[in-house]
Image (cartoon, rainbow, N blue to C red; front, top):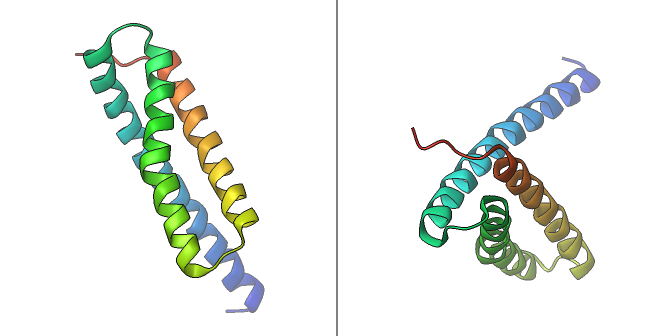
Length: 104
């Protein structure tokens, strides 16, 4: 296998893994939003976005900051990655909030 072919295969694998993990994240967010909606009531879109931000802060941001501190990564890189993850979660939350969840 040539170098460019092996790079293509590696990139494809990363994209597939990213898609799978993103669906898992969306599934967990949807379940958490449904629980939050049952608990709080009110506006589903707002509850979903708030739930996403809370989960991002409590799990993603907290773990990423700790991990990057031990890896001695530059703060700018950590901030960029945190912003990317926050935008990803908020967009997922908006989509889930706008589509809603059926309680069938």
